[in-house]
Image (cartoon, rainbow, N blue to C red; front, side, top):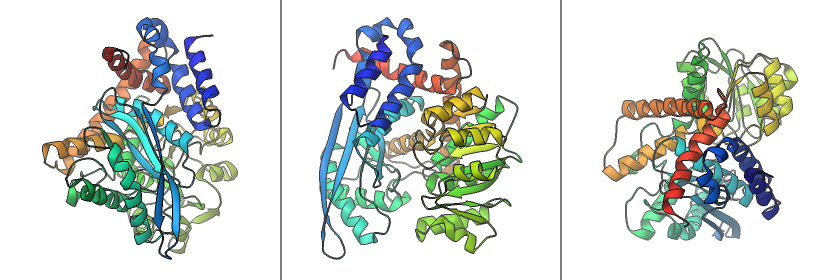
Amino acid sequence: MSVIADVIEKVKGQDPDQNEFHQAVQEVLETLEPTVKKHPEFVKAKIYERIVEPDRTLIFRVPWVDDRGAVQVNRGFRVQFNNAIGPYKGGIRFHPSVRLGIIKFLGFEQIFKNSLTTLPMGGAKGGSDFDPKGKSDNEVMKFCQAFMRELFRHIGADVDVPAGDIGVGAREIGYLYGYYKKILNEHTGVLTGKGLEYGGSLVRPEATGYGCTYFAAEMMATKGMNFKNKIVAISGAGNVAQYAVEKVNQLGGKVIMLCDSGSSILDEEGICSRKNAFVMKLKNQKRGRIKEYIQKYDALCFENKSVWDVIRDQDIKVHIALPCATQNEIESSHAEALVRNGCVCVAEGANMPSTPEAVKIFQDAGILYGPGKAANAGGVATSGLEMTQNSMRLSWNREEVDNRLLMIMRNIHKSCLDAAEAYGNKGDYVAGANIAGFLKVAKAMLAYGIV
């Protein structure tokens, strides 16, 4: 058995119930096989074995009191995976599905994503099984404060810098940062995604959606294509999806689909800027459901169906797919439907939204496929830019941040292609992203010795 196969088997044996983590490890390590022969020093120093083991795994109780005066108890997590190239950096997710295996997969992916940005950021992830849906602002505040009462002792501007993720938006970041500031009595860049009034960066809310779209545009340019007049399907209806819609519209594409956990909408006329503004208000302020879209606009709603279910079941023509919701949302039947209905490009705005079987279908069909650790790195890249601005005690204007984001996404795209070609997988964005991200971290780990 090869070194890579041994490590994969060990991971599966140690934590048999962490399927998402197994999937992430296998997807990354299998593409690193070409590095084993070129870098025997990595094998000798057990870099492959060490990189799949978190530096630190924190699990803690989060007790809080709801509006009825009843005590509630949730579980909190922070997995500080690897800080070889910089402070731990990664989002916090509040969702009922959160468990250790999910947080480990996200933290592991974050190592390579952050490395690809070229900014000095390590990999981490955190969260809780708390569900902010249906909770009052007061209840969300109480939970965030309880969560931070434990988390504060493990984070810091030069130690670990969390951000938002699913269920953690501007409201939650505000409550988390406000309580951190109260406890520590200091104003520091310990969280990103902050409001502009207290240290946030322009373009940070837009960054993941914009970055995913920029990456898709770079991929298509290699084939002489662009977004103009292309039909686009986007999953999700939150921050990433909303700004992906905005950028696609700016680049001349037409988005026809969005979804949330309850339903999908199909608007064949296109979700223009005016309609997207309605979606933003609906989801960000009213905290409503996407099905309310059809009460205002002429569109179809499919209850309990994802965007990819609708494309498969209704044979909807789509040129570009931007999955921006959650892990493993695109299965093999969805991938087959996308290929059948004319899809030429898939760029992932979410973390690992395509199953391994779906990825193989895309690659076998010759579709341009950008994995999440490359295509959705714009969010954490701009978080890194927010950290820089906080450290320098200044704010860059919108144009400067957006230009830096665009250049970072172009550089990530180039790094993926260069690494793929150098290691015998020309044009393979998956292999390229994994190898390029890994090499920087592995060389840093090697330089530190056995620590």
